[in-house]
Image (tube, rainbow, N blue to C red; front, top):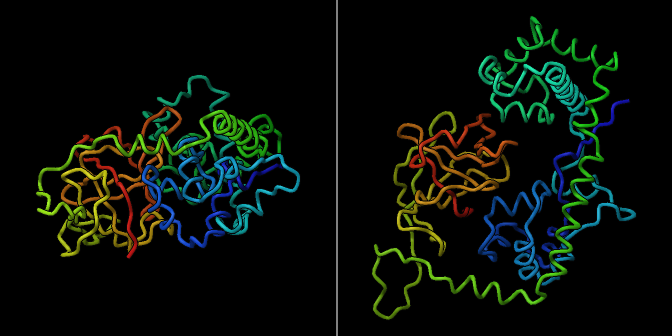
Length: 365
């Protein structure tokens, strides 16, 4: 029987949500507002276990939650720890679609086996001859979703690669490879829980050592960061009594088809975070193009003088319109932006830097 790790994307189980609830901090956004160095989107991914936190971020979280940052870590080998029970409050019960998960895993294994059996089938060749971008290849080989959920261009490329006339024939070939045992060598690389556990226990142990070995008093580093001078925007004079520290930014944003946003003024304003540059502005999302984690009522603070970082959000210019993307990196270190609705991927490294801006924060109305 094929072992499938339904929680393979959850590499960093933690107790952030537990302590947040104990403090009656019902909203992750409320916790985000207490943290100066972690964006809301990154904090969401950390709490949900999708990415590892850094030691300095755990120290900041420990201070905000009033606990030793080591207490935020979970020993994945501890008796009684169950990743499914931990994940359910955050991700819901799993698997939602066990048959789809199996199809995604078998497709991933078949593609890995196909590439492993043909040294000429390089990543560059797959991109140039079949139109499968490296980031898409990585997501297929990591069983992101089954064949039917990929767009027609990707499915057509896979059909051509396997010599199948249609999707049904392609999956029949994949299942035949599985039944013959031809995928046995690569299946553990795709969805075996030991891969996740090894990654989790290694990184969590390293974080524990770093937190335990570092200075227990974390207030000093925070104070040092707070006193680093930030160039003040010279577009608004200080009020005569030095009391006016609040800076308001104009909010733009009218929804367009295809997940785009027209940068038209709305008449609203949003408070600027301290780190916002002189050209920062607010952008009303309008639609939940990145999924439920960022609802359409959100207003983003965008800084066109900053380049986005992995784990955050980016705003890219498409003609006269704007698009909001979640930022990740492929296995080659190239930066990828993607949205869920519509389902698309953009290689950010190929865009002109002037057309890419970082999102500093999100405000929910």
